[in-house]
Image (tube, rainbow, N blue to C red; front, side, top):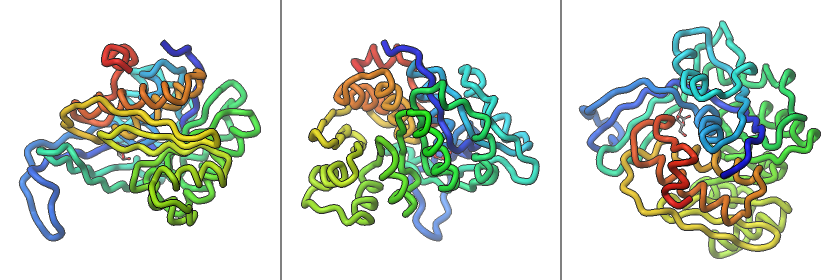
Length: 304
Ligand code: RIB
């Protein structure tokens, strides 16, 4: 069991508008879906909840609108006991919204995000007590300037910094060279490797090239095939337990939240990858980004 440690998550808070469809539509195609739900989401909020369910004391930093969606978007974080005293409520912009289609057969998804109030996520940063925390967890659904400022504040307070380069943009190039650990899925890693012109004929080689060039750690998630990490010391790999995926939305966020907490509790990289892979697999077994995030006990029962 991990110790309680303070974690700061700076990132997006969205209301997810989720429709289940018989298949993901082609351009110009109209489909009839089976269900529609409005659920709390956002990569930042999902990762904060995952870190909380992994056993950490979590402070969420971000922004919502003063509309009704803001309350819904924060509801699960509030119930779980995440510290919400550093959330800005902005009048002029609505709460961020994500439109999500989930394929009934595969659980795969397509997502479009309208950031709205997430543009203001940096406003509460000046009030955050970084010196009381051990880890900072970031994603890329808030402005790059917010992530840069958060990284600088965390570095000066000697925190371990973890960056999830999702959704991917070229801003990852600068951020990934500052964060102690970068987490990317295969597509995101390939884009980062191209931007950095990393050498190697396999992902493993290119990830090692990243580690050698930056002196930092890169974690590449491989969906059902698990994950691997490259550090200056070499490669570490973990497999994922076999499951039947119902909905993969939020699985990556679950991985990031669990991985960051394992790292903060001084687990080995091997253990951190294994626990995070198990938690992410469990998150695919039921619907919804946040509802599906497992508790630490569930992950332990499943062998993580
Ligand atoms: O990673 C899943 C999340 O991406 C969803 O909750 C949605 O809000 C988008 O931000």
